[in-house]
Image 1: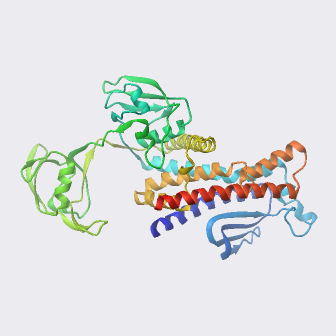
Image 2: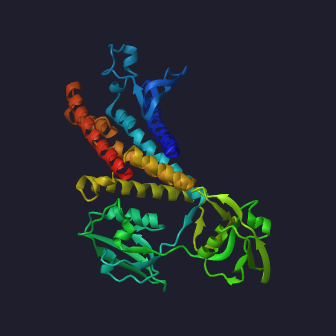
Image 3: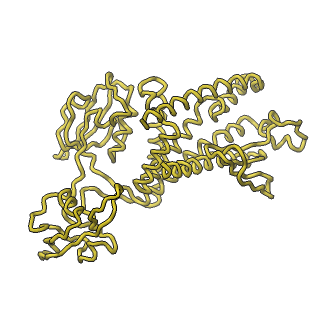
Length: 443
């Protein structure tokens, strides 16, 4: 839990910094004086006052948000001087104020784009999105999809991973039909529509993939070595990348699971290796290491080849792919918010700080790419959530500007305070539900 908490705080700090910097930079460009830029709330832990523009940059005790305090005549304790008025937020045009407010969520979207851009340049692992079988009594069972077919698209959403399938199916909840495109083993491509009017499932108990009826085919591991860890037992034994394991202890190699189980016993193994069309005999003695349960197991330090692939994009292609991924994720998140409001998606799916912290920790544990995907998704979710038309959120401020534009004058302080109280109450209720869900998941 400590690890998850640390990753959660790092995540929140990154997201809040980008969000508030969006407000800050556009405010400065629009000629608004920024009095304070704070990461966190509460007691000040560190601060620095810029000699250039007088802005106080600070880090505060409670790292669960942040704010940009701008000069504003409506909140100022004293009337502004003629010199200060031109730098006040409330004396700027509606267009400039809207741009400043929008800049926070837009910064979150740009952060996600940058993250995806980096991910696609590093390279992403592509797993075959192959259906092993169709599960009975599910929407997919209402049509005939041959086993070992590969999914290509769902509702025009291009499928490249099972994660894409899960996201696309969740986004389809509440629709009458879902359109799927798949390719059979004969390389024939088919498109079919499936009725999902009565399709419902508990997102907390099962994935959309299995609930819909898809049973994913397992990744196939081959007996050829694809990677050897430096200074490992395999390297010390003389094994090389490209070696094909033919036998172990005079037993014909059958599958990687059985071979791995033998390695974990930490007992010496006699390998029959095929290298450059020659058969070699190599003695492998696994090293003993502690696993996550504190038990001693054997480690060889080799990785098998498999039917996955790593796809890397050049800097331009990665940017285009990142843009596409950002837009797709935004659509999925917006659809999820709509489903929550309409009841198509159970409110049990809401997560609070504890749930997000656990997801952050788990994604970081799974590797940097996994964490970057998580960070991009949360950044987009934060940006879209802030655009909801609720007072105290950016969307609420935009709503006030729209009302001001339509009626020709801003709402009075008293009117705004009423909306603020309603919005605050609504958010407290949502937070309470999310925290309750977190508590239930911990039981």
